[in-house]
Image 1 (cartoon, rainbow, N blue to C red):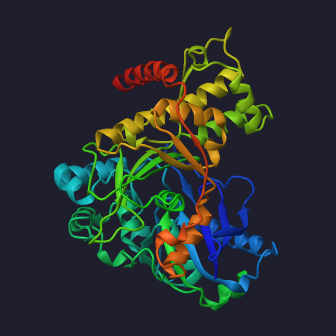
Image 2: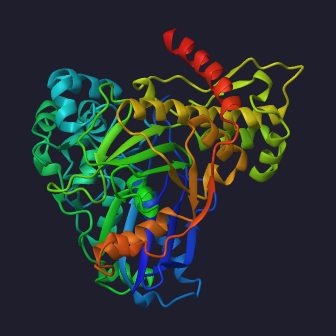
Length: 493
């Protein structure tokens, strides 16, 4: 059986076709080649068009099918990974009512705080494992108050992956994992939270049918199949947020296993069998892909909005035509610590690790007579690595102490300098794998469609590329403590 994986990213849609027999990708495609637009109507706002995601998905699927590497009629199941926490709202005709308020939008923070105070912090954390914060439920509350005419027309709310599945199949479903990332899920009762729905004044009718994550979420319609060159009736058998999916794609399924990613945003994601939470909700706990009421597996997620996006910003604005390898080569010429230059990469909205404060990206100790673009390139990568260390220390406070972290050989981890800074700043070795979100989604589809007897079988051919261990921990520790002192001073202001 061939498996189609679709990864709905912030920047683009990537798809891969995987042979279940070999677990290898036969072909991949991305659309568009340039980064997708994010609309920011006000500072701190971020929206994208769900119909744009669907158009890009269709183009990516057509592109990969045109590769000639396989027969599209042999595709037997579809899996979807997607950018987390986005709000999609549709009417009874499945028409989108407004652009999606996406993950890095900060407008809903006050609504989540009001819900936390009303429900009570202890009760909210015990049942939701998170503060409602800036997540999907709070974004819906913003729509209810500020766009009442739109809210009144809502038939169903969805996460981005639910929307793409709806466009493929005509069916609207969700899962406990998806609802938990939106802070709609009561982990004590294993059902939609009465506390959240009651406080915000939401009817349960707007929640889609809740199905197991690895299960049939509808079958591809004849019209869509004809348009995309697929067989009608193929099941969508897996849907997951990008970070749980990234963990799946790295075979991180068991308690104590930890994954990391450093794309537009950065994440460390550890699996636990305890319903754990951070008292300040600086890190968040969601139902993992293999969560079941009788075998609870949750993902403890530390998120940083400003990681690769800052490296990209520096490339576009200060790189003067250099590509990433050339930037890395320039940065390698500078010693650890960037000769005193310190950079905070927090220019992409409210950061959860700072209790949803907006800190902003900052340069400290910039010396016009000393520092060059090479210093900036290095200081940015060091600052991103130090932010991971800061977040990992919060996870350690909450009982997550990784001995090794698995990551894909992609995005920031393609930079030897960043990887070196990461392992030395955190003190944790990194195992790199050739993973990919769309490949993970394809393998997830195979698990859901029972092409594999177990999740373990889906990764029976999984091989590590290399192991990177700390080798300059003392040098990086001194620089990190200086960086952290500057940050703490900023947080106190």
